[in-house]
Image 1 (cartoon, rainbow, N blue to C red):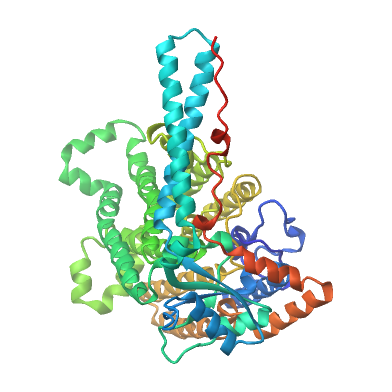
Image 2 (image 1 turned 45 degrees about the vertical axis):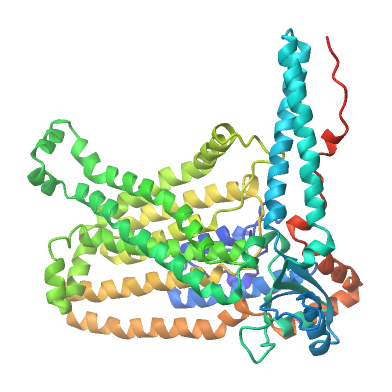
Length: 601
């Protein structure tokens, strides 16, 4: 999770920006909350452009300060290298890494950690863990039977099964140790390595420089945190990543297309008058007082939220297909996929399948009339989005508090798949890919309807206040820190807000045209152009520092380490941090290796 404090430069922000920043950058337990008395939550005297600029600069300052305060992190000294060629002399990748960096980075290069294909070891480790769980279950069953009155044959059978599983566990552990031998590992080297440097400056130069004239050889980038690495994806050849991305894009596109059907069905419920024409028995609903209002108002939002609840998890699985090297990159990618999915299917498709359902053909034959049709559709769907915001606020936040979905999944894994309860605590990281897109969609709806249906704004403010209270509690007491990206979610949030502003301005152009006010409609066009230009300015001014590490900051942090005497400690940590999970010593079966004789009653 994002874990750093807020400097005062970021104080100017709207309520939407404030909630997003709190969600992204609030530390779970260790950091005190920002001083809310110094915050201005709603400043109408400032434009959205001023707010976004100050917010972007504030988060940028937070990122630089946070990196400086966490100088012990190993990823600041480490570079991920892919596309390593095979050494022609020794027929190995490892020695090639040492020769290359010793020659081209002689003063900053320190050590390397080559990676190996550990699929077989990982499978054996899972098998050993499964056998160990069975042994624990048999031991517990034996203790229960030993304390009561049971048949001797059943007891002997359990003892025999226990001995068989312990022997099997010893064999599996022996196979794991054999596969971890140096001679065996040399045959399974991958063209990927983690290279550590003596200073942050050397790591920054190596990570952000093209190392070879061939762009597919010696590809370097900053290494993710050790706890953030997806080790299995590192085995994917770099030149195959483009194919993996295409597969992930096609899967997300197909899901977006097939989701049209449930959204269209939900919007059909809103058009109750048409349902009565198509299905006359539906008129019986009118006999129950208030039932038709519930059916057309609240029920569509409930159904739509039910469908949307599973979308983030599906998109996360599709983002996994792209071969991201870290959990944070995978979740950032899933976050963008979910946001565009919600904009396309919840916002636009809700409009098209509602009021514009009978005008689609006319819109295609007369494209110049489409803005006015869009403005008319947005106005007609205000009640639906109002109930959608209420439903998402009341049901979504309550489910977040109860953790109902994760609790059900935990019970399924425990009792149906027989995986047992792990020794580790039942904790998960904060679901950025699920929270940020839904909150961003609420921002989009609020901006578009701020002028068309101002009655929506009080409900939206209530929505953000509920979300503020819920997520502060969740970050304090529920979710665990899984990774730290130092604020790299913020450029994506800024982009989502920019899309919301653009859609609002386009809708205003259509609305003014619908109201027969051409002067106001034409005057909105320069504002649209200025917003686009401002977004490009933000990309040039702020975005590069989020994507790269400046040499100035790296040198300043190195100097601070020398002053505090932390240089050698950080170097040693960087060398020992990146070890593959299947290279760690085998600790399974230690309890069961010393078999105690069972006492007969």
